[in-house]
Structure formats: structure tokens, C-alpha cells
Image 1 (cartoon, rainbow, N blue to C red):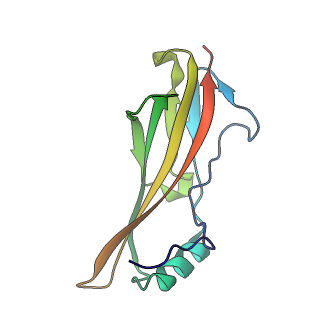
Image 2: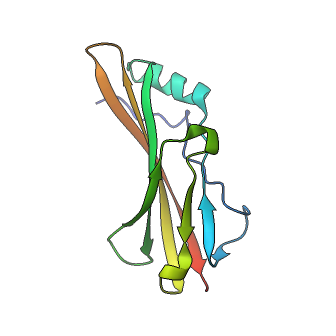
Length: 127
């Protein structure tokens, strides 16, 4: 197993309506950018092919202090920062967590691999 690299944080990084706001109601747009330069650097460090075949980002949420993630949706639309709309009116008010879980599939003919990065953001739903 290769050593853990902390120098190439290529994603995910959350973009929500405001960076400091942590209370939300109604539909919100979940998005996160990808830093291709840092991704390429990490792929090289891991000894993996640099040719990206697919990138996708599934979105989930869970109530705080629970273990099960509920899927919101997924996106492979890099031009829209992997945007998914989450309608919070369908869930109970309270503290939640949303993980950004970006998957990157790479290959160069016979070699194929997948890597992923995650980040979890806490927020409160108040409808």
C-alpha cells in the first residue's frame, strides 16, 4: 500500500450558497470543484495512470449521531462543479452531515484504477 499523501488535496471542497452559513432550508445547491493539477500530481505519486476516464460525485446526508447515509443524488457534470440540488423540506429539522465523496477512474489500456477523496460538512436544517 502506498504511503498516505497529504500534499495533494484535489477535492472535494464544498461550495454551498455561502461559506459561513451552516443553517439551511428548502432547496440548496451542493457543488464542489476539482483541482486537476493536484489530481494529476497525486496520480503520479501513487504510480497510477494520469488518463482520467470518469469522475463522479455521489451526494449523501445523514442525521447527526446516526450511521446510515441517505443518497441525495449524484453528478458527473464537472462544468457545473458536480452540482446536485437537495430539497431539505423532505427531511426533519436538525443537525446533519453531508459528505463530499469524489470518485476518479483512471486507466491506460489494461491498467484501470479508482481513487476517491472525501470531506464531511456539518449543517443544520431549519425549515
